[in-house]
Amino acid sequence: MDPNLAALDQVKSMAIDLGMRFGPKLLVAIIIMVAGFYVARWIAGVTGRAMRPFEFEPPVRQLMLNIVRALVLLVFAIMALQNLGVELLPLIAGLGVAGAGIALAMQGVLANLVAGLTIILTRPFRVGEYISIVKEEGQVAEISLASTTLTHPDRSRVVIPNRKVVGEILHNYGQIRQAQVEVRVAYDTDLNQVLAAIREVAKGGNYVDHQLGSRLAAHDASALAAQEADPLSEREREVLRLLALGYTNQEISKKLYISVRTAETHRARIMQKLRLTTRAELVRVAMERGLLTEDDAGT
Image (tube, rainbow, N blue to C red):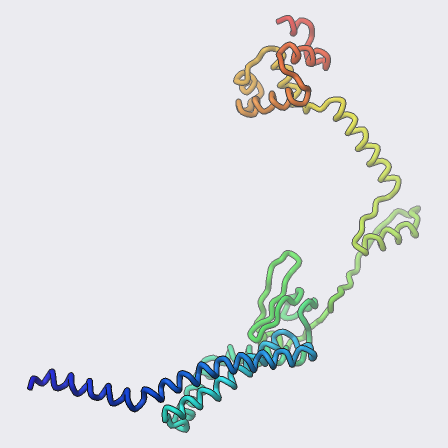
């Protein structure tokens, strides 16, 4: 018999033997792990609902739910391994040695995690509070196991590792910050009016002095009246004069150092604002506004 065929038959028989011995156990182990996944999710949901009355911080809540899922999955994994006939004591010893090596290599990350747990459990600050630490300050936007994120008024973000936060001097300003602002006024100013203005601005409103408001209103009214009397800008009046003199758009663009399209735009706006349609009307309006003399109109 061919040696290759004999080796192939041996491998085939061995595979069938292993399948008969471990196939059902492997199938049962897979079923156990799938069941463990759903049981872990269900228990985590029940635990989350049970924690609602205690008002835990979001990181604490998420950490507890993850621990519950991990413990349930660990129990089902041990059951699956026992079903496969795996010896657990050597496996646990090997995992212990590997865990020690991983912990030594990731001591910085683990330090952040432990510091994060300390911050979450002791609550020296909460999300939304303004703090100053490690020569940085800002509003707390997020507290995670690894880092704390601060935001600045310019919308920039600062991420501080938690091991830098624990053990440092922390200044927590809280939700409401106090600011010292110096306001200078004239000697003859009514102090009651000044205090009323400061209170109004501190509430988020606007304050305008009555006299200044009257002056601004009068100025706006005069500017509006002037605009209604002459809706054209200075450049549009120049274009109107040249149009009345018979210049084309190309000639106007060269004379005023603008593009032809800009000259066309000015012409369209003038015709729209003044409601004109012909060159004769342009000449008449230009003369009425003092942009042309009778000699210019006759040319």
